[in-house]
Amino acid sequence: MVDFPGRRPNLLLELDLTEPLVAPEADDPIARLRARGRRLLRPTLRALHDAAEDRHVVGLIAKVGGVWPWGTMQELRLGVREFAASGKPTLAWAETFGEGSAHDMAGYVLATAFGEVWLQPGGGVGLLGVGIETTFLRGALDRLGVEPQVEQRHEYKNAADVVMRTEYTPAHREALERLAESVFTDAVQIIGDARGLDHDRVRELINTGPRTAAEARDVGLVDRLGFRDQVYAEMRARTDGEPELLFADRWRPRRKIAPPPHRRGHVALVDVRGAIVSGRTRRSPLGRQAGSDSVSAQLRAAHDNDKAQAVVLRIESPGGSAVASEVIWREVFRLRESGKPVVVSMGDVAASGGYYIACPADVIVALPATLTGSIGVFAGKFVVNGLLERTGLSTDTVQQGARALMYSFRQGFSEDERARFAVTIDAIYDDFVGKVAAGRNRPVQEIEAVARGRVWTGRDALESGLVDELGGLRDAVRTARKRGNLPEDAPVLGAIRIPPLARLSRPKNSDDPRTWVRADWPGLSDVAAALGLPADAALRMPHIALR
Image (cartoon, rainbow, N blue to C red; front, side, top):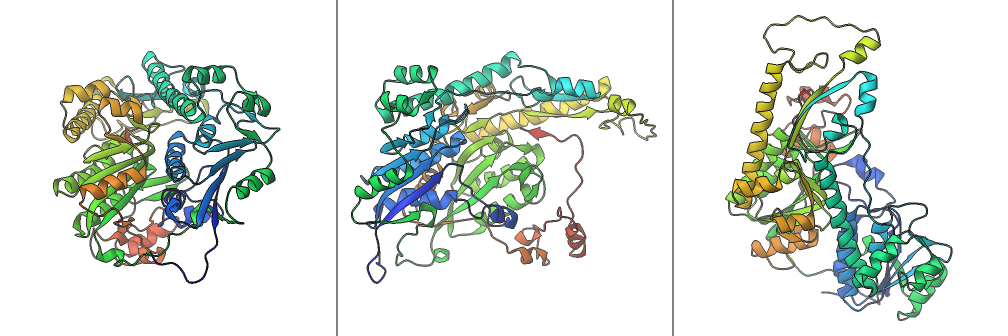
């Protein structure tokens, strides 16, 4: 490393962990605009893992609280623990852990990664456990005159239960109880080990909460009580001199003398974030959608790039279209067949279609609380004939072909239509299970036993053989470097980045990333047509969903 000229000040890294950190996509200007002013996830993780080696970084202080996704929290916790392993002081403080909320347990677990935990005197610790609530829509649909007609494979594929039923089925309850138990048990062990408490004692404290700040201190859940100014004064007293405060995501490593990244072997990083759909990656009112055309183009680029000696596929997706998932699956399969190692890193959720695209990889890395598996399928339609009648609307039809109106919302399936529909759903399910069995190199019967639509935590998926390791993105990159025979400092280059205006230029071929014209935006479908690009197809029923 080469030091910058002149004396560099000592730095005290600062984190605001009162809300989840964000990771906007480089090719999504709207997401980047929304992220302005918020702390960024990946630069923060990099700082937590690397800044401990910087002699000018003297400690880490963080304000913690709020509601956190368990997987994201666990990934950040890994980074905090690695920083703390350097021996530099780490301190977390909170105004409160749970002000009338039962969903702040993850925030407290995150705080226990720090060497010391402070709490504002008027705050409290609402360490209450892990609860899951589900709102069922069937009763409301019946009142509206809407009938859901859905095929699901199999009994644990409970996403469809929300519209099909008014309460948990035994299988639905069994799966959710195990999810809650797995996350809860993991949290109890972490808290006990971090705070020096017996695990049974932690369970007792949870079952008898919430607690005031003084009570939390007395039972060992926090170390000291104090306000922000007192916390920062204490932290400065533990570090040499008067360190400057710097948000962790703004920290940059000192420069190294090394060849430019594009001339070195590297790890290619491909992101799959949001529901999986056909076509290009785009935004919708429900959030970001991962388009199979966009993702597969990035995977093909990694396949064809000789400098990309390994690939990390980062998945943050609940699933989506079966057809779109298969498009991405094929490109992951081709990468592995070429001998180029593929390592999957799972975020908070990588289930159903998210697991479908992961199963061909060489190594699958999940966080303990990742929601994954859900190897199953459901599809169907909502019959709105009753609603139309109530509103005074009527329908008449003509058709050629016995099943021309099979997917009409205005009439239910006939017996033979439902039988034919069930055959297609069975075929998709069997193919899904077969692909997982082949990717995991296990008999179909073993995969069937852990499939049937059931969702697992990452820790339980490790025990059942659906994932290979527990860890975060950093661990996945480390594994990819090793399998790709790359040095430990080999760069990680992200997905292809296309400037917004470049999207409007004519592509050279179907693999050219410029085919990702945002034809779903108002007015751009006409631009796409003028450039000779296909506009997004209209959504048709049934939408075969791997969720």
